[in-house]
Image: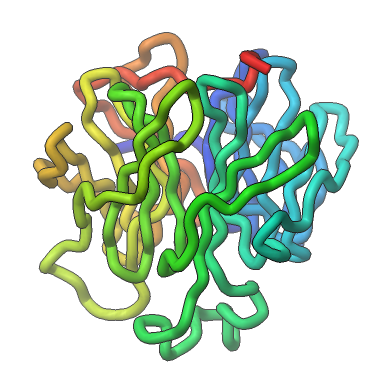
Length: 294
C-alpha cells in the first residue's frame, strides 16, 4: 500500500481523467468541491460545491456530480462552469444523492441514501440511532438529455455504492445492512427487481458506524467494495463470496477505482487521513460507460 495524494478534505469517488490524472470530490469545507489530482499527486479545485459525493465523466469530458447540500445533480465542466440539472424526480425531491454511473444505453443511474444530510449528521457524526433510523433510499434512472429522473426502486437503507458488472447487471449496496443487491439490465435499462447478491460486513469490528461504500469491478468479475468504518476493501468473487479483505491505513475508505490503461492498481479515497491510497493488485479494471450511446 502506498499514498498517491494527501491533504484532501474527506475525498470521495476517484475517477481517471481522460486528459491525465484523476478527478475526485472533496466533501469537507473549506475544500468542498470537485478536484483534479495530477499524476504527481498535486491537486487543484475545478469548482466549489456544497458537499459533493459521487461523480462520473461522460464521453465529452463533462463531469456529473451528486451533491448533497443542497441535494442536486450537477453538470460541471473542466473550466469550472456549474449547472444544477435536477433536484428531484417522479418520487419527490432528492434527499442525499450519493453515487452514480452511466449505463451502456447512456442513461445515468444514481443512488439516493434516503435521508437529508441535515438529518443524517448530528454534531459532525452519523446520528446515534443510525442502525434503526428510517431511510427511504432510492435508485434513480436519469435521462440527462430530457432532464428527468424516475425512481425505479425505493426503501433502500442508505443506498450508496453503484457499479455495472461484466455480466451486464447493475449492483447497488446499502450501508446500514451491508447488503449488495443486483438488478437485471436489458438494453441498458433496469428491467428486473432487486435481488440479493452478497453482504460485506466483517466479523472483526470495533464498533461505530460502518458499511459498504463505493465499489468497482475488475474484468474477471470480482467486485471491489470499500467498507467504511472497517478500514478494508472487500474483494468478492463473481458468486458473491468475500475472498479477501485489503486493509487500508485509515478506518474510513469511501470509494475505489482501477488505474488507467490496464494498470494493476486500485486507488482508494479515504476520509480519516484525507488521502488517496494505492494498492498493487492482480486484476485490471472493467471499463466504465461514459454516456456516449445517447
